Length: 149
Image 1 (tube, rainbow, N blue to C red):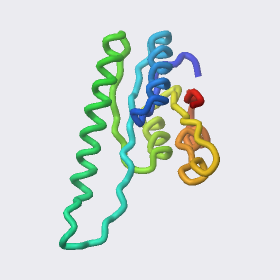
Image 2 (image 1 turned 45 degrees about the vertical axis):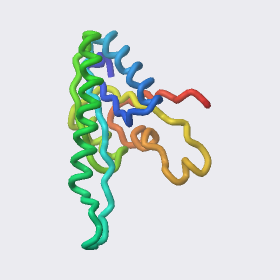
Image 3 (image 1 turned 60 degrees about the vertical axis):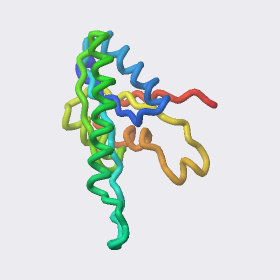
Image 4 (image 1 turned 30 degrees about the vertical axis):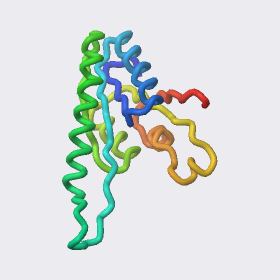
C-alpha cells in the first residue's frame, strides 16, 4: 500500500463529499500523491416514446456531464493552488461499480470516499455507494463519515 502515489476521491458535490475531499487533499499533500477527482452521472431510464414529450435523455445526460466536468475542474484548480496535482474523470452508470472500475483503470493506491451515514429505510431503499466500493475495490478504501445531524 505504501507509498501512496495515486488517490481517487469520488464526489457527489455534497458536504460529506467536501469533507472527504479535504482528507484526500491532506493525504495527497503529505505523500506527494496525485488525486483523481471523480463524479459519476447516473444512467437515465429510457422514456417511453411520446410525440408530445419534449424531454431528451441524451441532451440531459450531456448537460449533467458538462456540469460535473466544470465543477470537478474547479476542485482540481483548488488542489493545484495547494501544490497537489489533480485530474478529473466523469463516469456514467452505477456509482459504486463505476468508481471501482475507474480506480482499477487509474491504478490508484487508495480511495477516499464519503459516507452519508444513511440508516433505516433510506439505506434499504438507496443502499450505500461507499459500502459497495468497500466491498468491490481492489485497493484500500478510507471512508469519511458525515457528522451526525
